Image (cartoon, rainbow, N blue to C red; front, side):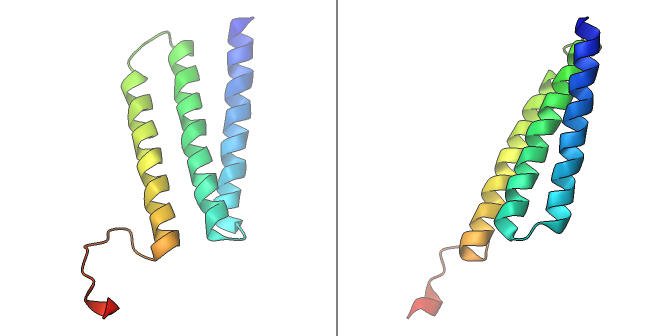
Length: 97
């Protein structure tokens, strides 16, 4: 019974990831695309977690942490890009005179 629930949840998360991929491609605005990318990262964490449970191994737990860190950093980078137009601000304020 648990295996059936795991496979159903894996299917649902895969469909949700495809839906978010559509939103990334078609999204009406840049913030919508950033939210969709963050949601894809969260869905990937869920998919890897379910696969880890299905295969009864702990080998994928480091991959889950890596995906979480990359999803967080990409969300912060895109948010800074939307807000300021640059990702890395070097502190050169020579244009503000």
